[in-house]
Image (tube, rainbow, N blue to C red; front, side, top):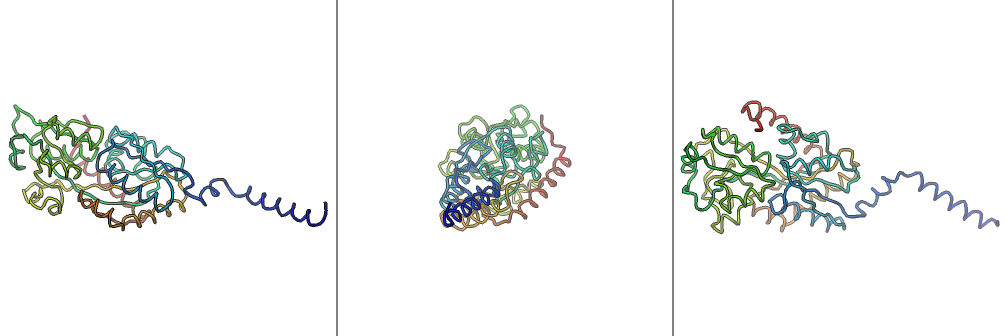
Length: 326
């Protein structure tokens, strides 16, 4: 072997050795994402969370030049899909687009296959949201007071639909506050079928996370009150519970992106930074406004702290109210 050929051989050998010394996860991370990213939404397709997730992740794909594929895994108050992400490989290719109820409440009131904070690497809280009380269009009640009067009739109990852990608890709290324990709280696999149950007349009313905006405007359901500190921008004529004298009903939710615990910090940071960019896009903000979703900005660290604090609050609420799963 001549001198030039020998130098070339040694250079090639050294480069190969250097590449081999870099862990595979680090090589993949450098080019993240270099294959489709699966984003699990732990609710049925068509609900507000699903709509927002598809909008946000489509924009993420455009920014990061990759495919972010939504995978709806509804059921068990969000625990099926959420648990699947908790068990997934922490490489950034399985993510979770979740809500406050499934993330922080379900582990408190059920035997969830995950922990609210310890099982995940929070990426970013995307937006916060309140709730609106809707009723089937032919229910003989056009105000919340009239709904309450019907609900207090023990001979003809009303039915309500719940499609998430948080709406389940809100409904149970409402039953206590208005002194109508006979209300039947029917469980559905997600907020979309929960809303459709009201539209079809299968149940009498529901607490909805503003997914029913178009249904309300089309006259397919009635809006009776909002669970917000102030009236909703989309329904300025609908009173708040506080205005109507209903206390102890201060609830809200959020939507956010999380990854399995152990996901490299560089990947979490890249996702968080791109979420921030998405949440500044005018078309995204306009869509969120349709559902009275309020965009927020958080760091992975502050989001993690909020999840822990919220979990602690739910534990106290459940203890105080005596809420139990039948």
